Image 1 (tube, chains in turn purple, blue):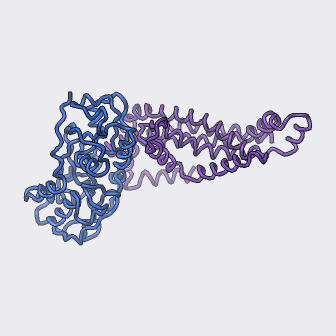
Image 2: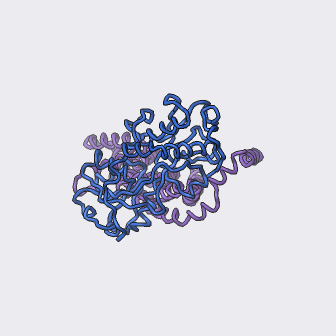
Image 3: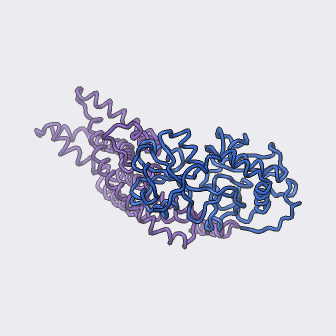
Length: 245
Length: 259
């Protein structure tokens, strides 16, 4: 507390503080830009919700393929491995750029040209690769005896997976999954490089036209309003699973 | 703008309080785009703004080898705190709101906004600005083009706002936007070299005028002298020569009436 107070005092008494306060924390500029930034934030929320659903499904499919053992599925395992390596390894911003500007450049009919859709595709590719690995870790953490017991009871391998392994695995990886989604909630701002006016872009536009960065603070507050409650939820879930374990 | 009373004699390399003594440190973004710069090299004296800077430097008594260029992204140019450049030239429009945060020199150029469309698209037949209201419009961030689009064309769907003119061009090429609104010189360069399938259908003056000035730190002791240099080369006719040489095609596009 004392350290924080000391640091705060150091910042506000620094010679440059009035200028910093005026350009970054101008209450007037934050207030006047807030309605516009909030309007843009709805696009972020819609993006985030839709991409999240896609990612949850796609990630699970990839994880199931990667953890499969049947020799017949080997080509799919290979594809799934390459997929996660590739899309987890490329910086998300680069992926958004490549998909957003690359796919329309192919000029194939039927492919989307809407930048919001393209941005959503890029984010889904990136995050499904992450989430697949989280699922996979969860599946791998369920002891082999669970599967053996389920098979011994007469369940088929696929029913054992569905009714015994996955329910346990998914419960166990709840907190890390939510952690990835907090990250996704912020990364939707990356689609702004493709042109859509979401919260960050609107804040940037206002900042550039007034030479005052304060609207960015308004955007930051909005992202926090979504990510902080999510973080508390992660804490609570983490606490619960800790008790059970 | 700060009005420092600078007698003519004060604006010399010896008297000017530049970032590094005896050198004029000038900032611009990278990549530096034609026709304002050429070959992404501000120090070759080619391109409109490069030529303007060397003419201003000569007026202040600096030789070409005493001009040092530094890279400053547009978004960083107006950050508070001490700046590591003496002034920044980057097609920066002078507005009263911006002038609260930084100093501007006297303007060295007045830019109209140009409308660029893909050849053969419906927007290519636009006779008035109102004809463009239903088009998908793209602009570059930080430019006054967005304000011009919102207030003059009032499009029915939100304009898309890109990071730099390369991305604006890419979006036009791919058809994610039908219409691009940029400064006239940029538009003529784009249609001449980067997107031959596009054409300039017209131009219109930005609301309130769009004048470009050199950007300086708020309260900079150099502002008066930099302004004086701009005014000097303007009065001597050198600015007009430079403008004619690098921006000459800018007058060619027809004016579009509002509706």
